[in-house]
Length: 396
Ligand code: AMP
Image (tube, rainbow, N blue to C red; front, side, top):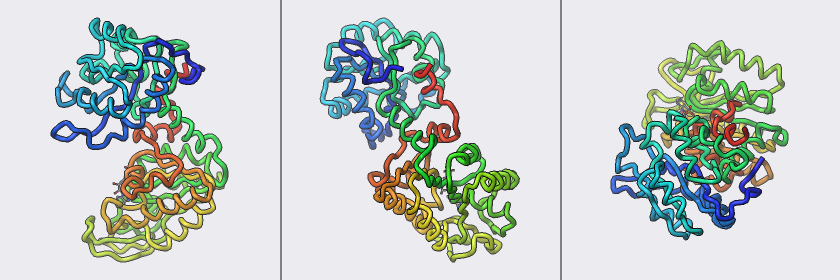
């Protein structure tokens, strides 16, 4: 299979699907450019190999065609600053005029196309639209992990027009490589921490992980469905009664596969869902009526320490408490600190898929772990063991 390193890009037009879906404020200024920064290595590699980068992305969710506030033009100047080369912007992404500008693009310049989702055909995975995009370039690079789980025109359908001339960009390649370090036989012991609100949204992940890990830490709101399934009193804690049987099935499967399960033995409980609630520490399986578990307690954190500091591979998906409330953020913060410590001792650690990424950023710990995934929904589906259309389309 071709890669960014093996493809001959000299003088070629290289259409790169990036994820420039950055937050903009009222004045249309970029408030967090990390998604743009992430693609700079791919863009620079293409430039250094004499290729001419043509960048396409979506931005926000335009409903009825073009809307000026979601134009990628707002990113032009900053992209120029980040890459150090001139960036031309064109106010559409398909059509004769765009093809003309692409054909005349000089070396050492970047062409930035207008928001793909100004055309509703993009998200519909429309063939004709994908073919129109493909006419702009000789080579296709997909670097947008955040949309790799969608079979959109620019992320998947387009790839078939570039047989032998398509590859993953640096971001997408490193997401694949890093998640495979966990899913395809990480160094043992392998520990997964799966937390967050609901069991229902994490079942497929739990099932997929059981064959690949030694320890499974179940935390956050979803832990209480497991504790109730084991006969515990969970008070007003978040429970999904429809999933009690599923929880039992997962616990049974874990036992059969010799996966050690860690549920929080104690919890910081609250008399209401609020940062200002009355609190106390309680055994997680004996929470008084009217009270709810909003964070793991000190004994649970001690148990977490023992397992994490002896792990060689760690995957973290989902917070261990309502970390958005400062008074219920201790266990999530402790998990972050312990993962950083384990990483210092030589463990490989990956944080991915949703709110644990937000947590690790909030606690400024991103630099202390081995890898922080850039794609929420895409990482969840990857961890579920699904084949992502954006990845498959390059491999085909
Ligand atoms: P998820 O998107 O499923 O990963 O869930 C993340 C959310 O779970 C966060 O917003 C947390 O506040 C929430 N959460 C974590 N622990 C609890 C808990 N014990 N009770 C209710 N919600 C929780």
